[in-house]
Each structure stands twice: as structure tokens, then as C-alpha cells.
Length: 173
View 1 (tube, rainbow, N blue to C red):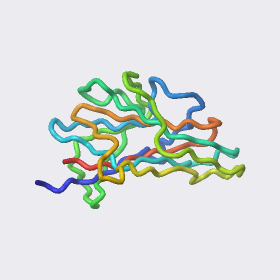
View 2: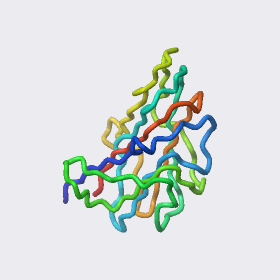
View 3: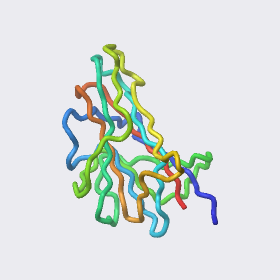
């Protein structure tokens, strides 16, 4: 059995987006599409962080959505995001696709992922964010994205100020 390869992708700092102030429906701030015809993607972690300050006290929550129907390609995205190997290889070899501001079919259930985060009344929010391990204590993954599947993320916040970058790590086997 081949050793799974680990990858990371995230919103490029230059294309970070303002958080949403309403529950997500058909626009995802960030999506990871499994473009491999054979391999499934085991999502290992996900997170977000403020790139520019909201200049206000913030409370944020990361939401996820797993598409039910298989897709042929990543839906049109505002900005495609680079896929990087966590082993340091320049050519990742992954067939994954990732993008920001993706219009999705809301056929799954948007749900909170991990803990919410609060700025504690402070207004300097650069770097405020979360990291969530998505492998359960028994070693089982929470999310396994099959070929043609997609997982989407959106940050919901108390204000639409500042900009937020998202990231996700996964293995392919």
C-alpha cells in the first residue's frame, strides 16, 4: 500500500475575502474539489485567520459544506488557488482544484467546524483565527471526499470588516 501524500491549499493572501455576516447558502468563500478519478481525499485539518484587521471586536465561526452530487469540475471560482505538497515538492502531483468565491449547489448541510473564536473585546484582529484537527481520537477522519466530490468553507463573523484567509490540509490515497 502506498504512503498517502499530504497537501495544503488556502486562500492566497492577496485574494483574502471579507467574512460573511449571514449564514452561507450558495456562495462558498473557499472550496476544495477532488479532481482525481480514483483517490479519495481525507481532510486532516482546516482553519482560517484574519489577514487584515477588522478594527472591531470580532466573533467568528468556520462553516463547512460537503457537496452531495458528484461534479465534473470545480465550479467557476473568482480566484484559483495553488495546491502544495506538505513534503516540500514544487510539483504537487495532486489533481485537486481549489478556488475562492465559488457558487455551489446547496445540496448538503452547512455546519460549524471547530470552535468559534472571539477577539476578547480587542480590535486588533490580524492573525485571529482557528485551526481544527479533523481526525478523530480513534484515527478515523471526519471528512472523506470521494472522486468528483467537493468540500466548501465559509467564515461567518459578527462584522464584515477585515479580510480572512482559509486553508485546508488533506491526504490522498
